[in-house]
Image (cartoon, rainbow, N blue to C red; front, side, top):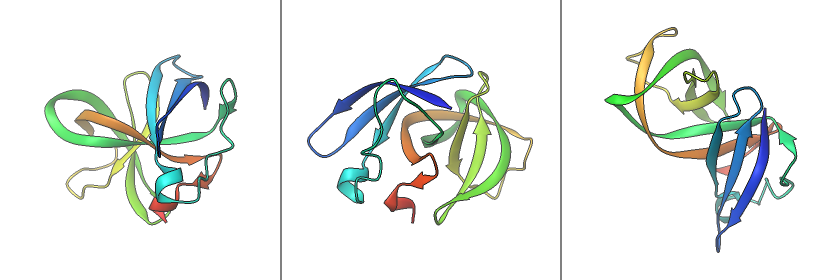
Length: 126
């Protein structure tokens, strides 16, 4: 669960700044639902708490942060790995057949993407 602590609007996209209820860590999640879909996340408001699924856009790299692979999951039509960082927060990363559940991988995160909020899925994953 995440608390929305800020929203930064751009012309067609926005950044949703969220704080993990569990770890108190802050993440900036990219929201392109207005540009790509039907603005599914227009209901998101500052200071409200939501069940967010954050995707990781990044690369596997030995110099990255360590994540533990928890499971394989689908969000829309995307095949993803559910991973957790050292703070215990959950994220989703494109599935790779070379890894097993329970493995640790090192990721360099370029961006977090907002994939789903309260079971409402971003159109680009459908």
